[in-house]
Image 1: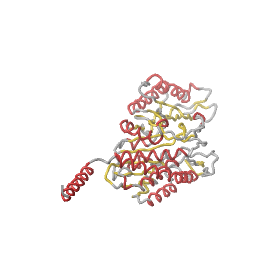
Image 2: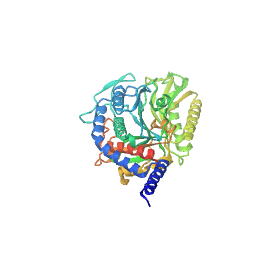
Image 3: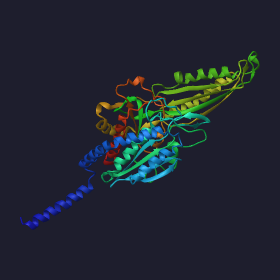
Image 4: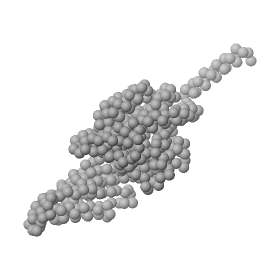
Length: 442
């Protein structure tokens, strides 16, 4: 065969090969190259992540007050060349990283707020911040680890921005205020972020988030498909009686005795009325207030408590049963009662199909022995609002030192909450690998 014809065939082969490559999804080799690049860059980021975490930990801010933290985040994201929007839901920051190739959109979320807790951990960067919360002077501490969430996501942003040409898709970074709740009268958190467009232009196809937890050792990652964290509702019950002398109870209607009967009656909702084999639920009274003197039966008593559920149908059913039980007991005593149920965060439900697909990623990042299928937990999370919009998975990352007995580790929200910072690189690598794997197609 002549050289001319041979060259023509080579050219044709190259052309057809290019067309075929363009028509096919991202090659496995591209994915593996991206994963290797990611791990190399993540190792470089580890000291930065720890430094950011310590800085944020030393300067904690309560919900809707995260101005310093938000400014730190925004400056960093802008330095990476991302499209950055600030002031979302008051102090939130949303940034967009466009990859070098078209593809899906992944959202990653970190919450920024601290708690009104005075720190009791002996570390050089311990918080000494004090501020006003609901009219009281309080200490402020990152007692739930949101400082680590911010630092990890800042690191992930830098890792992914440095390899954006390899990314077939878009990444949205969501730094959210006020996950821990707000003073009365204020709005904020995930629900407000969504109302103000955190998921707009472009809308994500999936959302991922991690939360550090003291019930897992550093290096471990915990997951669960389906209902994972409980819905949380608050109730306020006001029992109205008739004030009288404590020595003459028959001349009045005793709201204290009636409130006591209501507390006991409420427990039968859980023990005798709910289908306990379906999903667990909790109904707890946290405070009772009424009266101010030993020999005066007061007019009113107020009960305040929480309802935790893992199913929206059961959530509505408990609402109905609570109102019925309170009204019936109050009427039997000749009293009346008002029931106010304040809806809180919905059930955090990890998309089952997406959760199943990411398990191999988790095992590759942390090691199979460190990936744990864990039980449901009764605390709540406003990450649930994001998962109502798009498929999502929320994960736990361990931060208790491996040599520490987990039963003795201070829990999240404790003034003694301690973070083994070796867990942070696991959390950052988990988010980064989930992003790359999703963009390339799980």
